[in-house]
Length: 113
Picture (cartoon, helix red, strand yellow):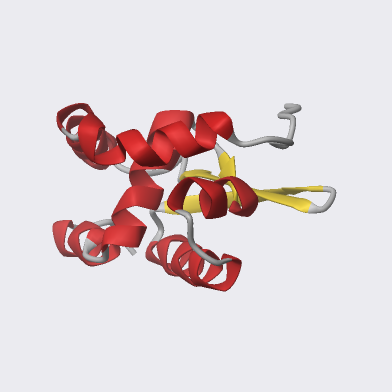
């Protein structure tokens, strides 16, 4: 199924999903625990939104041991990546508190790729 403007708008219509998508776009890859910390939300809520973003085709995941990492889907059309970059660049203050919590997170998982 092709990725369309309505697919993107539906995926980002919820503020939590929009924040998740933009944080993932900014950080390149995040796990549930990082998003839970950054958004100051409970794990089931974050996991539910991640599942919706994955089902929409916006995010992809990979397992590494006990961790599941989320990233933008590598096959997204260029216009989606460009739109997310524009949104991210224009709204850094909107994510400032979330990014600060993420940076202050203790025991962040180590990346190994």
